[in-house]
Image 1 (cartoon, protein in one colour):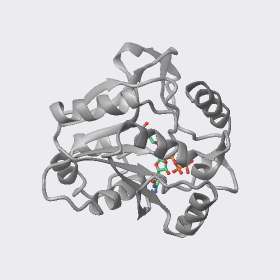
Image 2 (cartoon, rainbow, N blue to C red):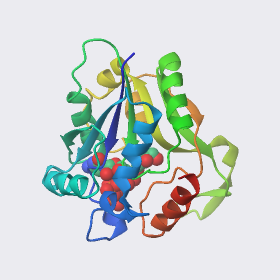
Image 3 (cartoon, rainbow, N blue to C red):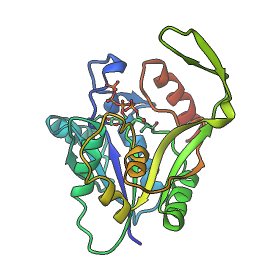
Image 4 (tube, rainbow, N blue to C red):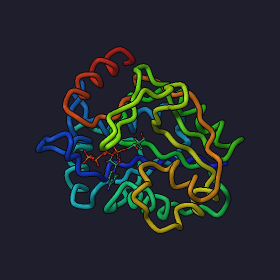
Length: 226
Ligand SMILES: Nc1ccn([C@@H]2O[C@H](COP(=O)(O)OP(=O)(O)OP(=O)(O)O)[C@@H](O)[C@H]2O)c(=O)n1
Ligand SMILES: C[C@](O)(CO)[C@H](O)COP(=O)(O)O
């Protein structure tokens, strides 16, 4: 089956509090988003890469590509109001008659290994939906509004990462739904569509650059893996 990745970088990065959108911030001399695209290109050059950005950032991105002589082929897609809408826009731009596999990955998760990408495509082919996760390392408590808080069994939980990879027919059927605020990732959308989610092993290094201190970790991890 043909493989695609939709790399979503259409958000506003409000928690990063940076003038430059976080997907363009330099880490080890290269914008975050270029590290992410490079990781997927390194997995397979037959992979088709879609990159979702706010349309008003297309020009800036093209300038950055020139500046860094960045020539990995990819198709630009305009972002939407939420992550759900950005993924949907990416999916709608894929022209393919046959069933295909599609991974969705956060543009701001640049420390993703080829092994995890390969595993996610392999398991999506056999299970329909493969979603990367890691166990919790800290203890957790549930907090109530008036009732204080209570210890929970952390073995019952997983932290969910990307890539999240699906058979195209599952993804298209699920993303035909109207937006709901519980859709924080693709797995929640596909699950709401009635499909089972198969969890696969992720990595603690596969961080999402969300707040300023994450950049430092990305720098450390990318230095260690380059
Ligand atoms: N409308 C949106 C919102 C988010 N994303 C992408 O989804 C990923 C995860 O979202 P998050 O880290 O929350 O990014 P932002 O929405 O940009 O950040 P914030 O929530 O701090 O504003 C990011 O790569 C982001 O660019 C997107 O493509 N389109
Ligand atoms: C998709 C995701 O990265 C999985 O952990 C996460 O749900 C994105 O959340 P955000 O609030 O949009 O950063």
